[in-house]
Image 1 (cartoon, chains in turn yellow, green):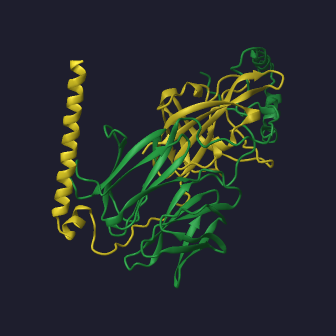
Image 2 (image 1 turned 90 degrees about the horizontal axis):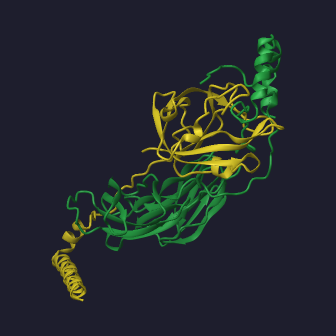
Image 3 (image 1 turned 45 degrees about the vertical axis):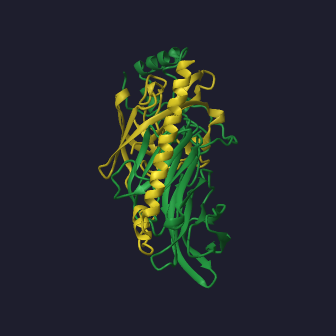
Length: 206
Length: 280
């Protein structure tokens, strides 16, 4: 009981202090001249010329390498294209990832896409260990203009290929993002294909 | 680990399914959303902006010296409600009375803009949600925010497309779909008209803040809301051959045997066909 009363009393004292502070502030502002008040509020004499920056255009640089320190991945990047039916064709080589060249340039607003194989029929490929990536892990992309872009993993999704979430993977984003895509188990031995894709979502670190 | 460099044995790749895909929110991989901040008060000097937890205990972002007309980059935050305070940029007292304060609710997968609008002695904040929807083909999307303090209502057209009619101070128009490329934006308020040219990339969405220049004439401060590739690939990716999967070791064994027996010729023949088979 006593503790409760003390707490309540302290609450009343604090409320009074806040109210007094607010009253002091109002009195201080009321005592100011209009010009002083304006200055205190950051007001200017007349209108300023606005700071206007045009939205960025597509970067002319291209990604050259992708590095994932956590997994020991350090791969050059081939250019990936779509086939006649619009399907994105995976990299030609097992040990080299590829960047979807008609898509977003890494570092630009939007989701840039890098694809690597999980394996071949003979053994592991460049993105073998992709599923081990955890939120916060680093992905670096070296650009042709010498920049190194650093992306942090946001999370991963294993998705059924038949229900591939194109909007999530390729859809508009308000910031610069990266997607790493590979295959994921289970393997369908009849179709000789994995039934799922693993998509890693990452965002450019500012 | 084997790091072989050879064409993929893609003859075994399965046909991909090109199916209709369900719509899903952008970036569902996390519970985060985004907010950006805009200073659109023509007679308020540059401000420092802090974005903090509602209790004010934790400062999450601090932007220095944000001038009139400026729109910040998007900042990523976990879902929740946050407090914002703007103080004059020259003010060093951390307890200084803010020029304006407000709050913003962040929803996972959504982007918000919090703008300070109005003249200095009547400054307010307004919050609106930005477009993260897919824009098809060669189109772009554009809207206006009427933040001019000298014009009661404003009309805006992008080329021949009407973006806003009679927009009042503080109004945020719907997005209009326009052809990508260089577009003339016509602003009019009564007899007062201005034309500004804007570049819209295909697949992108834009907000044009309609504001006043130093002479009180209409102008715009453009901001990119979101962007994507101009087209979306069909379906999924075939990025594995199965060598790591359970129960396929016999395939590898057969292949190893083939290779040992001089099957490399057959391998080469198939490898040359890879261009045809990889996309299937």
